[in-house]
Length: 284
Image 1 (cartoon, one colour):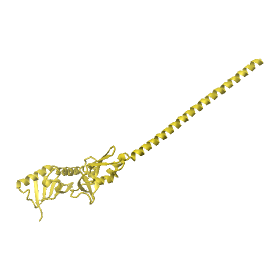
Image 2 (cartoon, rainbow, N blue to C red):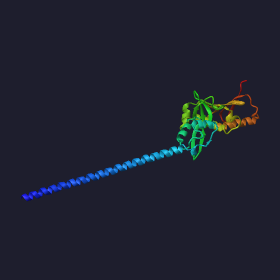
Image 3 (tube, rainbow, N blue to C red):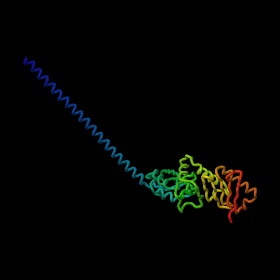
Image 4 (tube, helix red, strand yellow):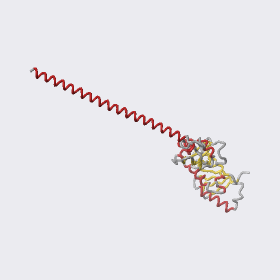
């Protein structure tokens, strides 16, 4: 019986030793994996730092190289604004590095200019910059309590200043709501639409109804559109609608009378009705 118990004790001891050896192997394997992982992390970190330094060095070298300095600046689409004003507004000058330039920032700076409606900026490597401007072309001055310039789309784009273009027609009788409605293309206001249609029509005319002869367009919501002119005829009341037809009616009457180049004392022509023309002599 004693021998049997002794053999059991020895077997238990051997099992314990086996467990210790297995645990040591697991610990060694874990340490090896941790070491490999840490080594890989360090390698990646070192490579990242190295690559980052390389890119920073390359960027600095490229953006400071004279090879990429701006030598040619082309600005197109200007009629009201000067090229010097454009470059000053954009903060651009020859010699600047073309690759170090943020084109989006250049666009934003230019669009902040009230006379610029849209802008496109393009760089041609290695040394040319192209800027295309679409200007807000002033069509008239809107009197809505204060004076504002409107463009050819009928949009208010800036407050009138002494330095702005002279001899623009004045628009009276409209409100800020009319202009906002027109810009939003809701077209709920017929009054501004009539004014814009007539001014656009006048651009195609010569003689008394030409755009350059118009001093003021007044829209009365009760009696319609009236035109105040520079020339022998001072005022023409058109009423609502059929403006082109009414203009042709006046031309026909004046041509038939043989007085188209001799009228000097007409104060007002009333064209509220297409088939009737009322002429009022000017006060002397």
